[in-house]
Length: 218
Image 1 (cartoon, rainbow, N blue to C red):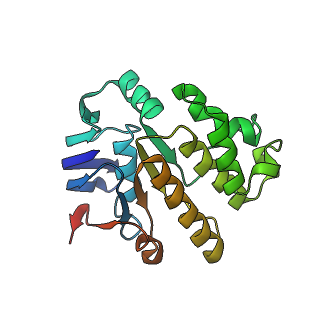
Image 2 (cartoon, rainbow, N blue to C red):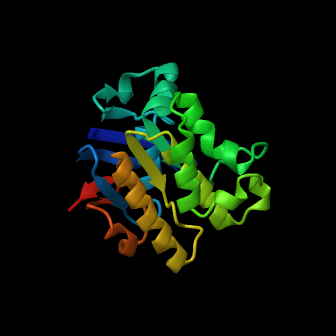
Image 3 (spheres, helix red, strand yellow):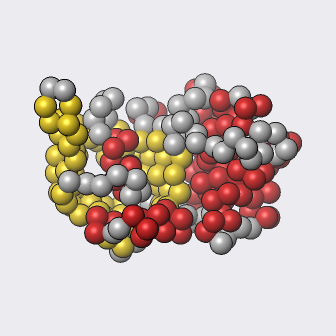
């Protein structure tokens, strides 16, 4: 489902070029789950953005479901995100003018895969069934995080990319939401790559991929 070979990415800084990723190789099979771990600044979020086509790699190859992300234009990368990739951002990125129900349905409607019964199940299991008429500003951080997870899963993406998806939750709630997300991912056959600083959460996934100095290390 996911293949990366010799991926590099640098940014210009006041102190000169900063190489964030320096020849990353990894592969993740369909239906598998993996935690991307490493210290802050190790390149976890950057790598997720490159895989999603939100940014471009300087060099190397990225393929999602056999589609070469690194050779795509802007329109093709947007179509890939619409049709194959779900993203859970650290900052939620909910649409403030839409209520919870509409936020949950948003990605699935764009992908042409809106399933009211699946959305209802997601809302129920994520504790959002009674909140669907509320707007993001009326929710707690934890509730907004659960909406973001539900929105990403509502379209049943082939690949789910999650950046610290429980980072705004307390430990007990985070563990519960994580277990629920893994169950929902398993039911929908989705491949999951999750960036996290928590080795406790990482241990709940099939594999752990450690980034250090811009490289995958064992």
